[in-house]
Picture 1: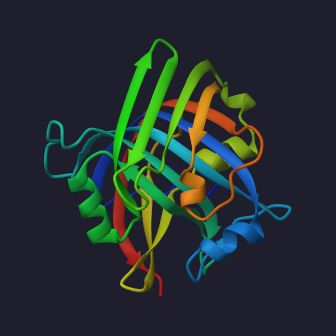
Picture 2: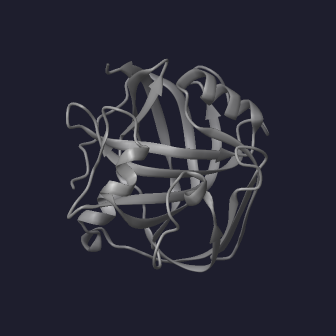
Length: 239
């Protein structure tokens, strides 16, 4: 379980800011996660366990590299449910079980272009001081599935205190999806996250069960970050 090397995305199809990010992670048996993955991907497991992450954040300034960001359309809450995988070549990356977003045009575009499992949801994100409240409820597939999370961001984690797991869970530069029946990868570049400690004050969610996973056991491992600017590369068919 190692973080992949950073590779700059020279030709980007999209530029995005991911702001007010919270990372929640639980460990699952690899044999539970594996059957939910498409052919060609295997769980990136250690000691038979694989991480599953729920990441709520504010998507901001989303735009193609040659156009300005449009007000309203380019800023909205999003929440991803993902796991960590290895591709056919052994390369590390992430696979999304779901991506909830509050803007229907973004949902339609991502589903049509990359077949990413976006869901149109009613969502809010509100920050007061060091506490952020995220809420989401799907409009369909299945209707009503969602979450409520209240989290308090804490002190900055010094680089010297960041461990192997911290880097692995936040430093991934490739996503996998299936487009027209073919496994496809997309590279993503961003600078290193500035990570803070965080504490969950309240959490209710059923995104995991909607994805076919059992409810997670125990408290999640939590990180928060003000955010990063990202460059999303062009899709590449693997097989």
